[in-house]
Length: 425
Ligand SMILES: O=C(O)C1=C[C@@H](OP(=O)(O)O)[C@@H](O)[C@H](O)C1
Ligand SMILES: C=C(OP(=O)(O)O)C(=O)O
Image 1 (cartoon, rainbow, N blue to C red):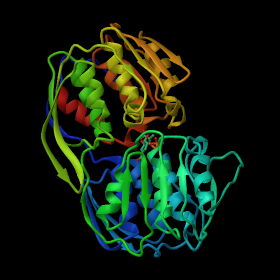
Image 2 (image 1 turned 30 degrees about the vertical axis):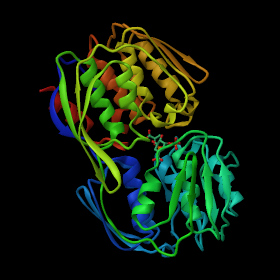
Image 3 (image 1 turned 90 degrees about the horizontal axis):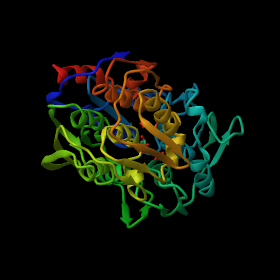
């Protein structure tokens, strides 16, 4: 894909549905009694992988554009899959589904693409094993393919060494089937979409500070869900508006859950012109419209508890930092090394090629601002967030950029280039 710089972006649009919420809506609907309807479902490859897996587990799922109907079979109604379950590129599908499959009365085999087969699964295998689960890493390397032998589970209290919504959710989903309460304690809060949706579907879950406790249930009830726009996708367009001169865009219906909206706080601290309008609640999730305008940004230090909140936005924040005045330092972000690619190395290598003064550190990066970015040939490493970050970086650069392997953008934002084009007219 070749991207050219543009003179402004303007206009109004909605971004596709939230990826985290779309995955969870398929999972909870599949485990409920009755027919659920999910509106504004993200038709990205990752969420389609979740649908494919739950179909293989015997669930009837019908997709009508962005409306998905799921005929739930109840908590104990999944059927063994004849074929190996393939999560594609989706870590969320793999980790959450492993929690569910650990508790079934049948065995499963799960795998995914070459990137998935390198992502750490011990982080869910360890706590699930403490609950009594039997999970084997076929290549003995703590990664997929996994063989999961369904077992009766017991409730545990687990202090997680990592702040990860996927780890927390995997344990909580297994906890629905356990013989007693299950508590997860996190070092810092991670996104809480599982907790919100579980309550919506009739489960019993409480959160106190960093502790989340789920109770086993007999039944979840089908629901109608409207998935809010994905703030992680909106982040790319917001950043485009901030760095391209003469820009002003309104993004409607964006999820601004406090465990996900750290990007807005980060950009406020960087001096961005962003307004949050029309705040409301939908299915327990806070939603708003976001107005973003060209801004004179300044560098900041990012560290501590905000990192899990902005974990998927750090690549695009590094682009904003490249255009800002002064230095930006990202610390405590080693989790970026175990995403679809090593996102620290990927951004440092690619932005360096675009003439940015950026270096990797052990747990993040340092970006010296005020760069004059130049087009270059860059690599996505088959990572959707890297590809989109580099596309946005080009919009205010000089010269065009070729992004190799940009098809991966369809993992989370299939209409990304169309939306950018609409706003560039
Ligand atoms: O639970 C989720 O939906 C997600 C949690 C995060 O991963 P971790 O739990 O590994 O931090 C995030 O990076 C991912 O894009 C989606
Ligand atoms: C890390 C991501 O997703 P996952 O872990 O589900 O592959 C992401 O979308 O940035």
